[in-house]
Length: 164
Image 1: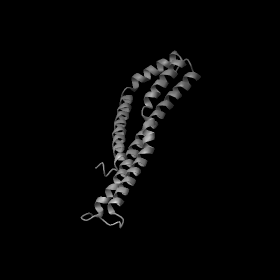
Image 2: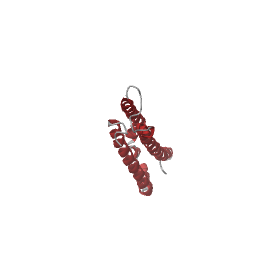
Image 3: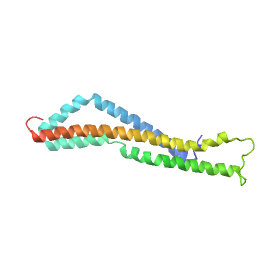
Image 4: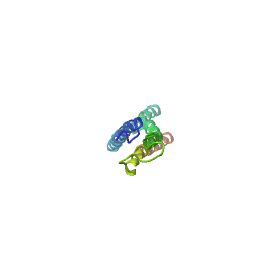
């Protein structure tokens, strides 16, 4: 299977796929718990708005760091995984052409069905990229939604400091 994935690029794709899936499940768990604990967080937020702006901003920045966890890795993986997959395919094609010899004929006892395996690394790279992109975009959307709500509350607190 690893040979079909293109050698070393295949190992890298397996590592990336495990990492992306782990991050997908971690982000899903994070947002699930975020939603479940919204009332506690809302009380903290409103109290901080009443106390003062700097504390509220620091609290918001700390929560933003939690929400951004893994985004750079996901974004990078979404771009790099298809390239690694293509590299594995090129390695596989070069091995295939070398096995066919200078006349480019099939080795005895082989058919073309098994030669499609060289495309597995491209497919895997695209799949890893897809999962990374979806995870990144969902995380980014939830983060922007939450930040928009906080900024709205912050603007209201500045306009009417007596009643946040």
